[in-house]
Length: 68
Image 1 (cartoon, rainbow, N blue to C red):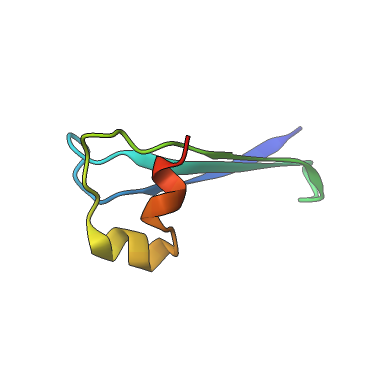
Image 2 (cartoon, rainbow, N blue to C red):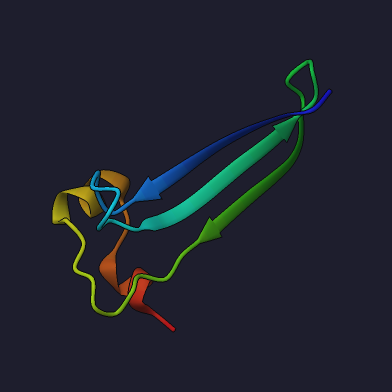
């Protein structure tokens, strides 16, 4: 049996307005030995200004989110 643990990093807590910045997942076997890992970073929408506290808390820089 495989288990998948996942986490998201977002621009804030408002589900209607805020965006996912990063998605990460780890697949393990039943003994919790890591089998696979995935990390996806998302580009910030050009019209959205994230909460500065959310970026500071996550250690994410605005320039990295808006790069092509």
